[in-house]
Length: 143
Image (cartoon, rainbow, N blue to C red; front, side):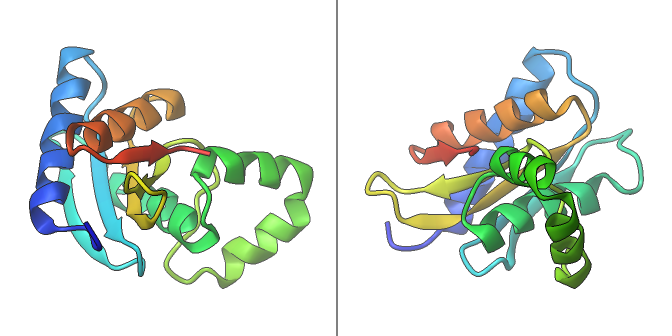
């Protein structure tokens, strides 16, 4: 696979949502971006709050833009808060440095995109994205 397909993105959304429901998580917003940071697919569950999609987008976008999962971005923010604040300011599409933004890679490590989830704990958000990515036969890299 050389690029992230819509079919794979839909499979990730469906599997991620199934994982969330099986584990009684809060209503979620899910966003999948391609390797350019462009929107590939998204879903907002009934009952999500208004900003969930934007937080999910910021998690995915930050991961793709920096080439590391948003869990790693959280560590970077803790180590260099002023730098991360400045980077967040110039990241016009958003940058949310907490777990829940997972890179999507192929079996050879090539970056295909990012999967951002928001609505439950950040750790659970990351688990949802990782479950979806695995269901599509791809590799999750949460950082």
